[in-house]
Length: 615
Image (cartoon, rainbow, N blue to C red):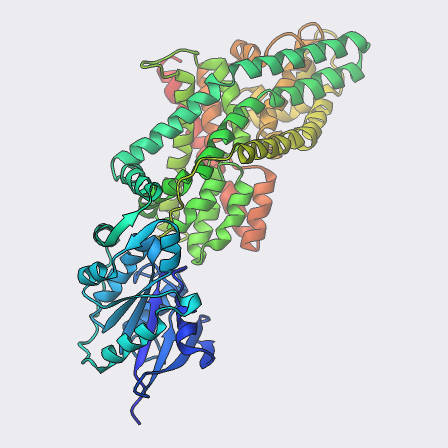
C-alpha cells in the first residue's frame, strides 16, 4: 500500500504554527510521542481539492537545525529522515511571523536549503499591519524562491489558498533532501535581514527607529563597546551620585549613636546598642544609596528593551566559554542575588549546561558584595579623576565586576573540559521593542529593592551582628588588655588568622570571614562592630569606619580583601539552594571548595604583587 504524502509543518516558536496546523486538519488529529523521545507528536489528515488525502505532522518549534534542546533535535531528525520510526517528509510548510520576519527567516532559509518542495505561510499578517508593517508577499516569494501565502491562522484566512498551493506542490517531483544544513547562523542572519528589508512596502516610524538602533547597538564592534560604556557609566554613578545621600545617612547614624550613648549608662547594654546594633547595622545601611543607584540603571535597561540585546551581545562570548546561551539570563539575575539566578537555571534543558551555570553563578558580583566593595574603595582608593572626567573609584568598581565575569567564564571553560565535559549551545531570542521606561514601574522596583535590603539589615545582619557583639564582648578584658583579644571572638579569629595571614589578612578580617557566610554585607557590619568595641566609648560614635580602616590596614591588605570577595563562596542561602537544585551535597561541597581555593589564590597573588610593588 502506497503511504500518504507526508507534509511537515515547521517554524520558529510563536509563529502560529500549531494554529495553522489545527486550521488545516480540524479534528482529524492524533497525539502521541516520538519513538524513544518524550516529545509530543501531532499528526493529522488534510483532504486536497481533488480528494487526495495528505498526512500532516506538526514539528516542534525550533530556531535552528543545530539543536539546542530535545525538541529541536526531533525537528532536525524528522526533516533529515533520521528520526527512529519516522519517514522523511515529502514536502514542507514553513510558518513565519510576519511581524518578526527577519528573526524567523533565519530558520526558514535553513529549511529551504534542505531541497524539499516548500511553501512559506506568512502568518499573522493582520498583527503586522496593526503595528504599521506592510509586506509584499510577491517580493518575498521572489527572494526566497518558493511560494509565499499570506495567512491569519486563528481566523482561517488564507487556508484555501494554502491548500491549493499544497495540491500543486504534492504533484511536483521531489528532488531529495540535502544531508547537511548550514550550521553557521551569521551569514543566514544577514541574508534574512536583507530579505526582510526588501519585502517591506512600508512601516511605522517606530519600527524604522528600532531597526536603526539595532543596527548600531547590535553591531559586532560598536555593540560591545557601547555595552561596556553603559556599564562603566553605571559604576561611575554608584560613587558620584551617592556621595551626598551617603553623607546624610552617615550623619544620621552618628547622631543616633551619640544620642543613645548620651542616654544610656556605661555598661553592656550601652555597648550592645551603640557598638552592636547601631555600629554594626548602621555600617551596612549607609550603602543603601549605592545599591538603589545600581538597580536604577538595571531597571531602566530592562524596561527599555536593552537588557535582552545585551544578552544577544554576550551570547557568542559565553558560547566560547562552554556556557549555554540560555545561561545568560540566570547569570544576569545573579548580579542581584545568586539564589534566584540558580533557580532560573531550570530553563536550561541540558543537565551539564545547567550544572555548569549553577556552579559559576556565585562568581557574578551580587548586590550583597556592593557594601564591601564601596567601603574598601572609599577607604583606600583616592577620590580623583584619571582623565576625561573618569573617576578612579568607579574605574576600580568596574574592574571588580569585570574580574568577576571573567572569572566565571574561565571557570565555566575549565569545568566544561573536566567535571562537566561538553560544549554550550547557542540560542535564539526574540528582541522586544524599544520603549520608554515607566517612572511608576522604576519607583516600585526601587522601593521593593530597598525593602529587601532593609529587611536583610533588620534580620540576618542584625542577628549575626548581635551574635558577633556577644562573642566580642565576653569574657570582659582586664584593665590594660584589648577587649577583642580577650574575647571568644578574638580567640576564634586568632585560629583563622594562622590560615589567612600568608595572604595578607589580619585579625580583623579573620573575624569578619565567618559571619560573612550568613550574608556578604555582614563583613562590613562585623568590622564596624569590632572596631566600635575596640575603640572604646569615647570614639565609637565619632570616627568613620573608612578612617579606622586606613589606620589599621595596608593598601596591599585592602586589595587582597577585595580580590577575596570577588571569588569567595556566597552566603549560606546560595549553598542551600544549590543543594536543593542538584539534589545532594556533592556539588555544593565542590562549589564551596573550588571557590575558596580561587579566593585564596587570588587574594594571595594580589597581596604578594602589591607588596612587591611597595604598596
